[in-house]
Length: 200
Image (cartoon, rainbow, N blue to C red; front, side):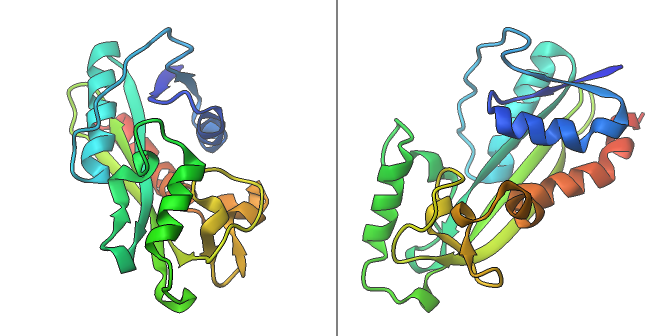
């Protein structure tokens, strides 16, 4: 059975990918499963570059198929911030509450209809000796004036999906995982998996 390394210790993310690939007869492993403690510097200037850095570094080191993602929030009214710096927007400690506070502060006085934003997720698929492949998902929405909902993580309490009239934090996992940026990227990955994993 083919082993696939997920360049993450996020159990929710690993669980999602395991479910997605269940019918492909692969064994999904995390960094923790393999005793890997590597922090790959995210020195890229795009989500794709950062995803590729993580996937290629670990694929080469472990000589196995590796998946890595980079994702974040881009808000139009403030020039696309926080973008690739989403997790560290308010500092290196990656404090979600402080990140949201900073974002809302920057958007103070801007009406809801002008607070357009989107989440991006780029998945990098790296196989030793082969070119890196990418799957990408995007979800458009608005940044609310204040937090709504208690589920999810990161910026979910302030990311409103207009057609659902709910923030990500007000949705259940099943609903969010149907429309989210990561769900769309994973769907694209699944559609291409057999070609990418089997290419000579």
